[in-house]
Image (cartoon, rainbow, N blue to C red; front, side, top):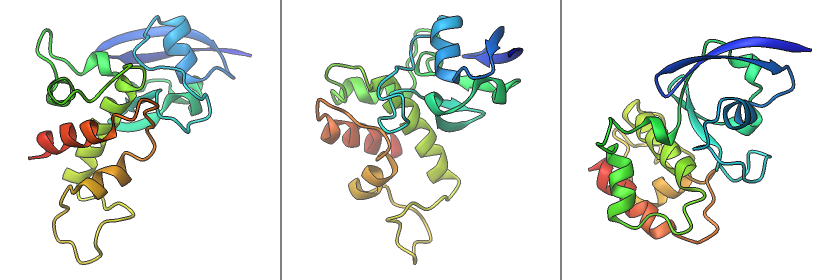
Length: 167
């Protein structure tokens, strides 16, 4: 069965006909030519496919495209304002928060979503119960970013990049 859907990707509204079993990741990459989100594990475990879906981070390999008709999707490519990088993108470069770069778009989208969650006061598993204000310690960042894996092991630099933006 096929369905026609409309999504806004990185500020551009696009229509596409998809098999109702098509994941959002496959629709983005294979049908719309949006290659920023990467196909890593295809099981939602590595986070390489993370995008901002209606403002919240989501693993696009686990989302059916047809379920997100009308959605707004932001990929790492859509975070920059022209030639001006998003502060998280800039911090990743400044702190060498990537090595092979394969996981980087997902890491960056997840970091942007995570920082928004912190601003909204959403606690994580390691947030102190008595916390009035969430402090982004290295442990807090690691817990919040635990759904994104880096096979190169750039975690210390990723944490440093996120801490810089959080200040």
